[in-house]
Image 1: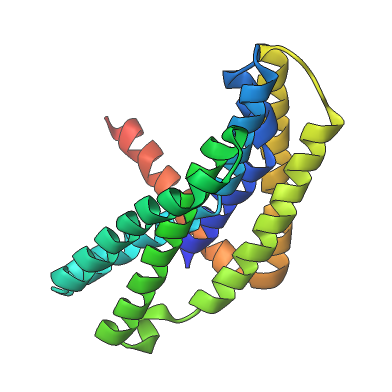
Image 2 (image 1 turned 30 degrees about the vertical axis):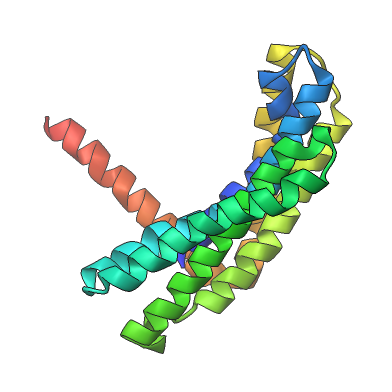
Length: 212
């Protein structure tokens, strides 16, 4: 559940800040910046699938289900290739890069869903307890965060590397705040658990440095 929430947070931040972030990398070419922004926005939802594959594959490997894990992950990346081959020939030239981002999202999402099914079959429903709630809360927070970040980006149209870098930070911050608010209201228990875990790790890290 923690991975799902944090993956949705990444989605919210990347989608919300995609426009100024793209301008940071392509500040002298508006057309290229628009293409990169579209690619980042369409790739952003794939972070959830990536988070699921990274986590659930380890769960299945630990349970000795190596074959189904390999099949699901390989199938997901093959689907990325197939989706790209099916989408790219039918989009305008300026949409080729965003189409590649969409293809990646499709494949990673499919791999994540396949691994969810595999975990449920291998370990039972309790292994996925709370996942639907965390997914719904993350989706709501992701949409709110993306909208908040995009609102900041649109409200502050700037030019140049440093101004766009600053707007990227502001958009990411706005997206994070919106995500946290919505997620707290819809799934506060999981969010508090994630926060407590992060604070605990930070505390352990400080203790280790002090002892050193």
